[in-house]
Length: 492
Length: 121
Image (cartoon, each protein chain N blue to C red):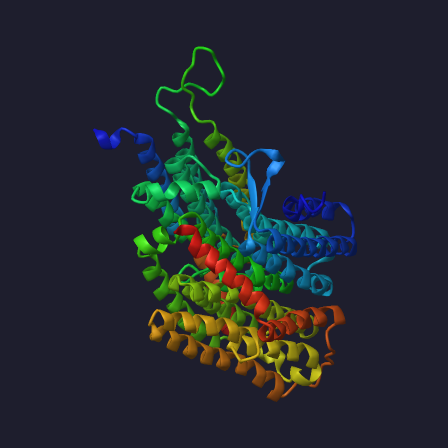
C-alpha cells in the first residue's frame, strides 16, 4: 500500500507536515516534527530509488485520473537521483538546524521557520517528481515564495533587501517559465511532459514552440543563477540564516538545473534543443565566463559566506558547461557535479553555521585561529574545500574529470584548460580560508568552544560523503551515466 | 489586416512590456511590485485568450451548442492568480519591513546606506 503510493507521499508528507508545524506549539516540537518528516522523506526517496533501479520508471496518476488529463508523477532514474540528493541534504541540515535556528532566529518565529522550511522542501520535491509542466510551475512558486521568507529571516537588515531582490527576479524567472508553458500548451494542447515530448518533434519549426523554448531557457537560467542572471544569489546566500544558506545552496539551484535538463532533453529532445538551435553556443560561453569571473570575485571577498556564494556560481558554471557539451560524458559530468557540489557546499555552509554560532560572524577576521579552537568544524570545512578544488580521492575530482574528458571528446581543449585554471583559483580562495584558520593569530580575549555535536556531525556526514563518493564512484557516476544515456536517447 | 486578426495577443505583449519596463526602470520598491503584477497579469491574459475558440460558446454542456471554448486555461490561471496574489502580499510585507529597517523604500537610497555601511565597516 505504502510502496505503491510512495511517489505521492514523497511530496504530500512534507506538504501536510508544514501546517502541522505551526500547530504543534513550541519551537523544539516543531523542530522534532520537521526532523521526522525530512528523514521520512529521505527514506521514501531511497525506497523510490530502489523501486526504479529494479523495476524501471514509475508513473503515478494523481487521484487515478489517467495521464493527459490528470497530473502524472513520473519517477525515473534521473529524478530519483535528484530526489535522493534533495532529501539527503535536507536531512543532514535538520540536526544542525536546532541550535543554529535557536541562536539566529527569535524564539516566537521558530515554528513558522520550520513551516517555511518544510514548504520549501515540499516545493523542491514536487518540482523534481512531477511529470506535468504546469504542476512544476506551481511547485516552483511554492518553494520560491517560502524561500523568500526564509531568507528574509536573516539577522542583518540587508537580508530583507536581498530577499526582496530575489523575490522580484525569481518572480520574473518563474513568469518566463509559465509563459513558456503557456506557449507550449497553445502549440500542442497538452501539459504532460511525456505527451509534449511526443508531439513536439512534428512542430519543431513552429515559431510558437521556438519562442517557448527561448522563454524557458531564460526563465530557468534566472532560477538556477546562471551568469549574467545571478545577481540575486550572492546577497541571498550571504545574509540568509545559516540553515537556509546550507539548504538552498545544496538544493534550490540544483532543482533548477534538473528542470532545465528535463525540459531540454526530456521534453524538447536533444535534436531540437541542441541540434537545431544555437543554445549550446549560448550557454557554453556564459558558463565559462561564470566559472572564471565568479571564481575571481570569490578570491577577493572578505566574508567567507559570500566567498562560498560566488564559488557556487562558478560551480553552476561547470554544471551548465557539462550540459552545453551535450555528449554522454558531459551530461554525466553535469549530473555528477550537481550531486557532488550539493554535498560539498552543504558541508561548508554547515561548518560556517557552526562558526557563526560560536564566533558570531563569518568574516576572515572571525575565523582567525579557529583551526585550533574548533578543530572538528574546520577539518570538515577543509575536507569539503579540498573536494571543491578537485583533489583526487574526493568527489570534486570525479566530476571535474568527466567534464574535462567531455571537453576533450569534443576537441574543445580550451574548455579543459579553463576548468584547470578555475580549479587553481578555487585552490587560492580555499587556501585563504585555511591560512586564516590555521596560521592566523586568534583573538585570545574570548573563549571559543567547539560547536554542539549535532551541528558538527551534520557537517561531518556531508564532508565524509564527499570522500566516500570520491573513492566509491560506482553509485553516483553509474546513476548519472544512466541518466545521461536516458536523456540523450529520449530525443532521438 | 491579417496581423491584427488576433489582436488579443498584441494587447498581451503591450501589457507585458509595460509591466516589465516598470520593474526595470522604477526605483521605488512598491512601484516595482506594481510593475511585476502588471507583468504577471499579461500572462493571465495570454492563457485566457488561448482558451477562446472562434465560434465556441461557454463550456457548459448544452444540446444546441456544438463548439465549446477551452476551459482548461481558465482553471490554470486561477492557480496562477493565487500565486500572483501571494507574491504581491509577500513582496509588500517585505517592503514594510524594509521601510522599518532602512526608513525608505527607494532602491538608490537603500543602496547608498548599504555602501556607506560597507565602507565604514
